[in-house]
Image (cartoon, rainbow, N blue to C red):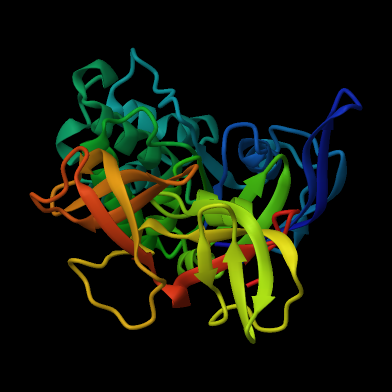
Length: 362
């Protein structure tokens, strides 16, 4: 396996459209790194540049100790698994797995050994004689992954490989890919727009927006310490609530205020000046004061529920306070019904403040 380094990489299409700007990423040997962001953020473009399927406009890409800017894809020793399984429909599973090796004229005995090894790891031994049309979506995806495994590449590249699967199968395949990574100790770079996939799978996550890296951190660090409003809103399910207002100083304390809210933010705001800003609060940090007692919370506020989304043991409740729509994540209860009264408060130690440019202040 090998480490991957992107150094000041830029991609511009037609001298006008900037798809990726000043990309600097270090992927350690054996690391599982996720590129995540909304559609059009540049994550697939970055993956394709690593694979050699897109030329870079500026910068350098290293795989191991080799500068690969001018190397053809076949010479980079990477394997890519696409969103589309791209299996040959007229070939058996075994022939699909062996095709790339046969093109490279690998010895037949070694081909058989690699296929049996990969099939055992992925649990597809019983499907080797079947055609792709005889397989389920999850089984086809295992074959696509197996085709990459048998090559024994330095780096595995995954481009939204689970997006064509149903929800249950996606969860199962996530677990299988993690187990595969643990077995192979392989360097893997994985592209997804699904932040749940990113949070559950990655050793390190690269959050992108409009071709620019917003933050590179571990999943827990991204969740607890987002660098800006974009990351704070993108990471976490349900997403963070944002409230527009200003911070002012009153009676030796700092308060966040607008027409509806008056929140003591002294516990998070230390050295600050009065300014317009955005307050962020995660849904799980909005407290139902009739259910949960907690010391450091804001003053009680009242509202009525608009929508209740049951999630099994939990529920997402939607309500409005003043002109602000809020979501809270609570333990499901019969009390949460349409138009029911809610007495809520904010956990004062879990507040976030962002300036008018979206940068995090606290």
